[in-house]
Amino acid sequence: MRIFHYSRFRNPDGTLAAKAASARRALGIDWLVSLHSEDAAIQILADNLDDDYTLLCNITLPHLRHDTDMILIGPKGIWIFELIYFEGLFKADGYDLAIFNNRAQRFRRCRPNALRQASEDVEAFRKAIEPHFKQTGVRLPWVIPVVTAVNPKTHVQRTETVTNTILRYDELYEYAARTIKKFDDVLSAEDVETIVHILQDIAQSVEQAPEQKKIFNYRQKRYRSYSMQQWTLLVSIIGANLCCFSSFVIAYIYFNSPVLKATLDGWLVRLRILLFR
Image (cartoon, rainbow, N blue to C red; front, side, top):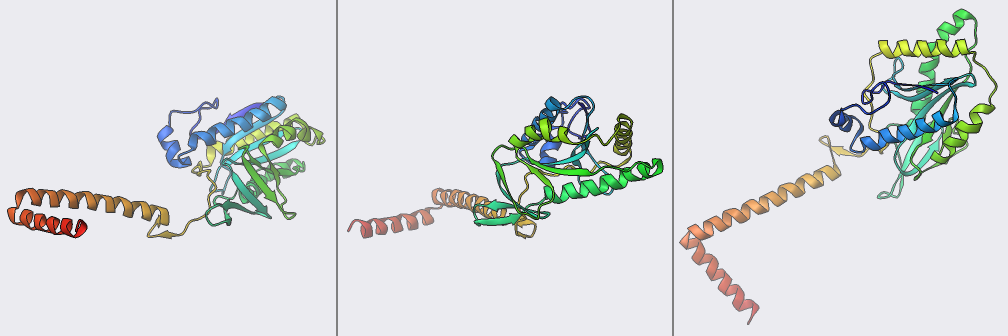
């Protein structure tokens, strides 16, 4: 399988580029987990699909504010993959994706939403590719959106209203090894090459979207741009600094002011009398 990488944090051959600091800022503290999870999904597809298939990773399609995790093109059709990276209990209902929050004991909406992004990817892909196929009189086949949880500890509850294909990590191997190959041939080798070349041109002409953090968290309430957890930590740090500073000031005055020292000693004597009476 041919693989093309367009992530700013990877070299053309897929190896990690020396941009750890920028990757941490863009993808979050677990940026390395995200990239290794992508590698695992790519390897599963590569192990089960031959050179008739082409995989384009982290390409930005026109009019999208996010990059598309993976686009797979082959004689059996076209698949667009969006990945869920981190562990947790998710609930998929239509195009809504929610994660279970242990503290609140209920589901909350995810930002970003992999289900909605996969559907937006399909629409943007068709708009970019269809004009060429209309000129040649060839009908573009169905583009299949696939959301894959690449962390083995991730579980997704699905309702009947979900239209996207949702896979667990252990199901991706079966999907690549058998399900994809069950489809009838719908694209010729020439059609596959044409689509790949169009996407490569798009990758060169469209400004690359900023890669999003892959944590898929719910949106927290914020006060003056800080979350409640951040305010708690900030107040705790300020309180600790005030206590240290106050202790230092009192100790300095105590050892340099005879009047204050005598007053404090008198209060200490009274306190001992009260305690040990």
